Image 1 (cartoon, rainbow, N blue to C red):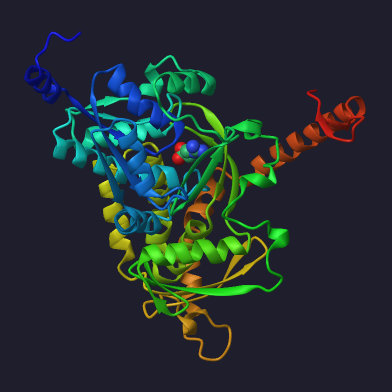
Image 2 (cartoon, helix red, strand yellow):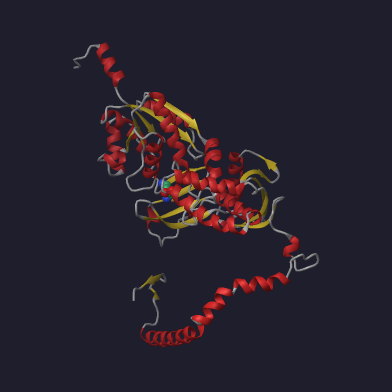
Length: 455
Ligand code: ARG
């Protein structure tokens, strides 16, 4: 059939372009592994990274890729690097997107991207490919990170391109092309997990009013089934980095793993939120983040002790911008580096210990101490040993209130208060009239559930 002689065929094969595929072992990336060969004529090098996810049997994943015709497959344990080079910065920045989400997916993408690019260079691959859908954040993060590391590499996103729109279509394509089809039923949720937590979306969670079903949680106990005894934990920090748990020094990776266990056992770390994706969609996500939430809250508690008033307040804005920048896929950016420089400068004296109590789904900080604490007992105390100079307060207040007094004299609050009173009275009268017509905004339906009725 071929017009090539063997050596010509070999030569042609060796001239085939290569693509490095971020491979997880699941249906999507397995089909993709074959699809890139069949549809794009590329040689596939699969890379499977361990960032601490549940499904981290890398040897199995690696063999599966080779079975799917990949010319090479590399398994990379990225956990230490993820903890030390990424998560450390996230803790320093108290990183919570929209004040709530510890960014577990957003933080893992840059480190995976770095390895993808390194492996592409090692194999001389012109292409890299990922398995993200076309409407999520992760495609943005992968491609932005990859292009920041190598502006010339070409990125393929087969899910955005191929005609396989349903799981059934994918299964049919897989069966036709000799890709093993999963025998287990499709999982009802989309899950992403690693050291820093677990994200759950889709299925019934697409209704933001739906209470998350009990079966979505795997890292955290149901708080009502958590131990009846509270448990105390103590985390030691050195310049903002957690270094010991309950007096035992350990690498950050082990500390996070241990905290996931102990906090998860007490049912701590569940999040149910609606968030703003970078592509403009609002999505309902649930997260389990026992270690990440514990470390961020305990780190914040130490900062209240060790950072001066102005730095602490200014840092709230820096922290929130850091989280947004990383969420938006800009890990490899001058802005993230500059924000990090602020955070790391602020961390120098964030050294000390924080104690917290875990009990049935909650974590409460119960103590903090540091050799660099700016908390001064003698200044704070109302008891003996008070060194605060109260006589200085009068002069301070005289100057602090000077703008208020000037404003009061010139523009005067008196007339404003009179006008406000009249407005308030009118508003109340109007409300009373409205209440006569519309009794209630919500009513009970026959099945007892609360139904929202728009007015
Ligand atoms: N919404 C989170 C983020 O964009 C998690 C994304 C991955 N979630 C998932 N269930 N697949 O960072």
